[in-house]
Image (cartoon, rainbow, N blue to C red; front, side, top):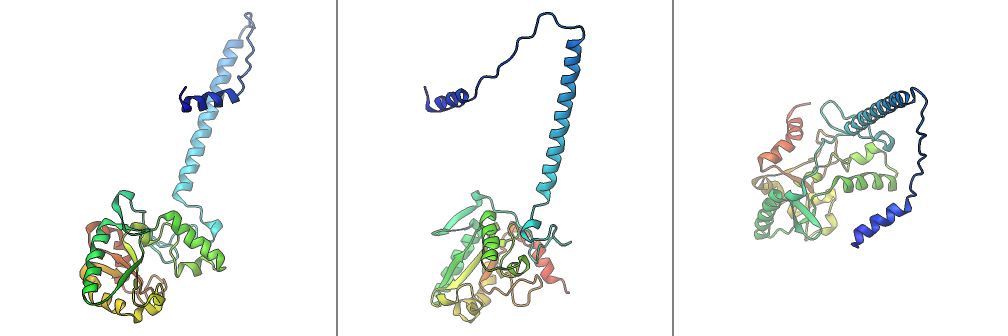
Length: 250
């Protein structure tokens, strides 16, 4: 007998067969009708219960349960949550491995490869520190670190996006470092490196934009290492809200 069939047989054998009483041949008048009506009532109640549960589940799906973790229950009128715009997670089929342990959207990866090659020709050692992050990973980064550092959600959101609101989940966002100055990785001091100066002059040519410049309107801390790719129609659509928000005056 196949292994799967054996397992299913064992599972069935672990469940005792239900004992059923055999009804008498002579039933009281009207018993059959009463049983039929009772069955209809039970079935109707079950259907109503299922519909109610599905409706509640749908409502919960549309409104993530975040209040118990210190996040606002609803985003602001422009879609932001604690300053961050919402982003869907990239489809796995759109991602490629750019370097060990780091994936990027294929379009961002192609542009980054060309940009790094140009930087190397100028003597600049651009290093990719981070790329795609799943929403599950972002959840861990946001809440676990906040707990370790005893941060409120508002404090944590200044340096890290809540799950579902990170540009990294799109596969288009990258964190860059300088191979000649690793001590500046993920630090504001990265702005003092040759890599950052080179990016300021050349990144736009490869359609990379600094996501959170100094004094940005989203209220996110200045991150000179965090750039996003906007070189395709799909990428432009994803970041349209953020770009429009940045362009509009206060």
